[in-house]
Length: 341
Image (tube, rainbow, N blue to C red):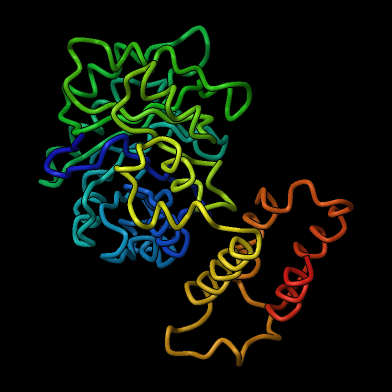
């Protein structure tokens, strides 16, 4: 499978864009454990054009992450086109258009999944961005606004006609948010539509090799995107590949990942926390040993992963320990709690 000139291995697995999750530290960790492509957090076109520092910071990428997409969102075609030109300077492999974020502060402002209420505007934005840059442009959207407006089969054709190089479909409507089960039936219809020539990437509720295999085999998608299931367990990509691919197709990294034990997974979580601290608090040259007793942004940022990681599942009377982890203010305190588990 390939997107434009970017070639991917058999049955590729992609990391979904997630706000406050897919920062450089987490993307690199997912790449280490087999993610075939990663995507940045959502980048606001308006804020990018206004040169807002926090937004510009999201354009920071490393060669080790490639292939990588930077995802932008907005509701004005001219602003989105201008933002795409700015993004191009960061030299991503792809620019992705966010037409799928369902949260109220985004969708109800006519941005993200909110554009499912205004298809002409969505298409205008898509054409403007495709025409503004020479690097491949992709899009990510949902089945429709709600169950009475399942428009994805027709919409996919129209987005393809605008010139996108690939389309990712989350198998829920905007109204569903992240509730209920993702419906892959319409994703399969898009993929099997003879008019569709671009790769179709499926997204929604993929948390196991069995489910990933079903998505590839039953619905025929070109790639599977994993989102929330990766939070707190970046190694999920390799665990799925261990089961999904024949032994002869496995990489050395994949074979090594089969033997990750509890202590090794704890060590990976700790390394992510340290990487987050360097991303948000410290220059790379600074010795973290000098900051063990400080309250750091990276610790707070990492709590989402500690809250949902499955590695502590099944441990008796763990609730109080988890609460203590999420309340720890310093690296010394947090690591002492983790080490005692």
